[in-house]
Amino acid sequence: MTRSLTIHRIGPGATVQDLGRPGYLAFGLSRGGAADRLALYEAAALLGQGADLAAVELPGMGGVFEASEDMRIALTGAPMRASLDGAALVWNASHLLPAGSRLEIGPVTSGAYGYLSVGGGVALPELLGARSAHLTAGLGAALETGQVLPIGPDKGTRVGMKLPADGRFDGGALRVVPSLQTGFFPDADMERFGQTVFTRDARANRMGVRLTSDGRGFHVEGGLNVVSEIIVPGDIQVTGDGTPFILSAECQTTGGYPRIATVIPADMPRAAQAPAGARLTFRFITHEEATEVEARLRKDVAALLRKAEPLVRDPADIADLLSYTLISGVTAGDDLERELT
Image 1 (cartoon, rainbow, N blue to C red):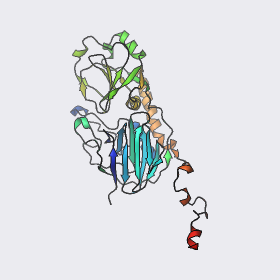
Image 2: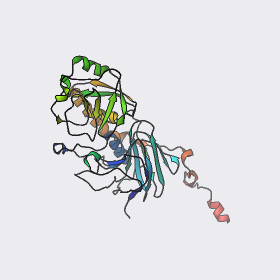
Image 3: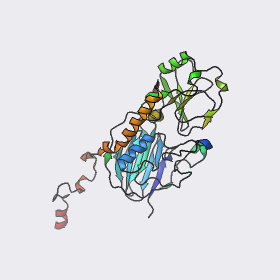
Image 4: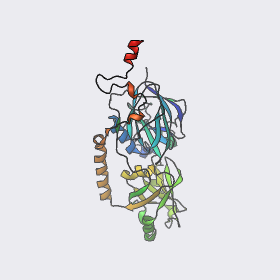
């Protein structure tokens, strides 16, 4: 029997995502992949498998899922309300999803993107070397109710693990480096940019996040005449009305709006996970400092496996607690009843 995950209900905009498609920028295709790549590495640590396996990305809302056979799952990214046949599940942890059970994932409680990873990964056919949907490029499609996702073979056995809670889901400070047009902005505007508290606008998607602030916008003289050139996720473009946009995973590959700065890759998960209304600020660092931050991030990601610890369940949450043999020789107590009947 083919391993599969049936979608009984799904929120809008949910897609299958992996680490994306590097190497196609020259052909007009951005990398794409998970908006919060760190969430895939967390799931990999919880399940003891590769971070390159595809998962279900849930933007704001979850869904209801059913496994064709017992499967291991990990819930990472933005915390969401989750339950298994009505019993609450811990987020940022791995669990066993028994065959036929209903996994229900509700809305986010903070952040923007939650992730459902499965032992063996979602095994949709690869397109240009990845399983990620890239909707702006017409690769793949949003998930729909009634869809059945194929799941790859799972060689792992570990389950019931958790990772420490992470604080990247409520906005905060983002570290940036100068971009190609940073020098075009007046010194006064650059100083004001570093002192401004921005609000993440409700208008956001996998292409970019709009930022609002009090006061006037940010402008460069002749900004509308900037030559169109290569852009990448993390670039902060400033449109003609002076509004900054942080470009995200599915951004275009060239653009003519001036870029005031670029968010470093290590802080892109925080940028992507900022919910509508979250406060964001920017702090410039040098390229040398950014390189050091990225090196530390790689070490932190490599250490995730060691940070995972057993998930201790509250006995009150175990509906069939008495069916477990908790101590050798002690049973649920119904064996004597069977002998007397």
